[in-house]
Figure 1 (cartoon, rainbow, N blue to C red):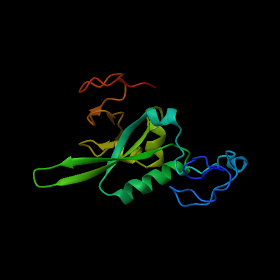
Figure 2: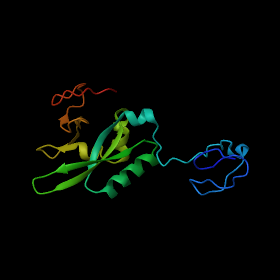
Figure 3: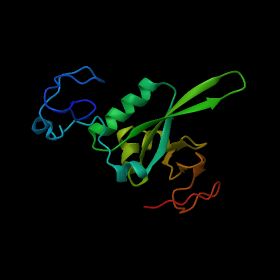
Length: 158
């Protein structure tokens, strides 16, 4: 006889575990059950998780969750990173969406941060498409045709 909790063995004639106070069972009935497949809430595998980089920040968790849901519906893996930011007055939380760097352009399209925000008005009122983007490492603006951030040295892979 065996205790199903602590797995201590008992001689025949004993009915309850002295430690756990539960009924003993036959040794044969303790066969390992098949593991139950649990549905994961995360759609991100370990490899993708390792390559996620901060894309943009949000002021509220609800905004970040909404953006993450938009990305997931579009098939882009994303998660939320919560950072603690300290100001002189108080401690605040920042909410960052993290996505694979190779999918930054797609994320820009999904979150509508593309052409409308990238367009710049010149002095004469004309609108043109800017090639600059925010560095994923330092957040500084970088020209679109560079492979290395001139501010922090981060490398950009395509």
